Image (cartoon, rainbow, N blue to C red; front, side, top):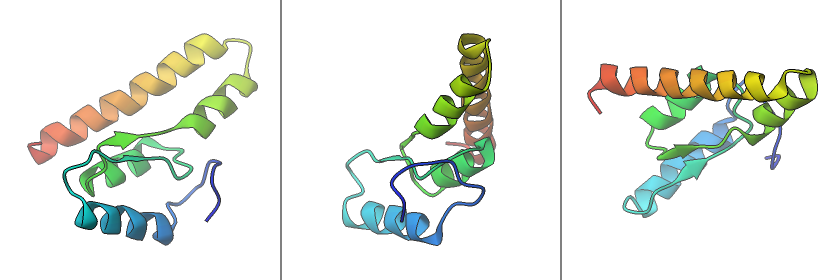
Length: 93
């Protein structure tokens, strides 16, 4: 498994590692960052028990893309937060 970088799909190994980590120690908060590049990937991990989502590579690629980097990153982070809040309200968490 690569350590970093955006991915189109969540690797099965990341999903298994999250499941195993939560099973072994469900009391310690767990943040996950396996190349998450979309809000839907973040929602899937949150629903599986991730307590935090790391989107570092996505933020870096957003910064590199344009001259309006600060605003673009703000919008990116807001979109992830909004999607995760909506998902938690739907699931009653």
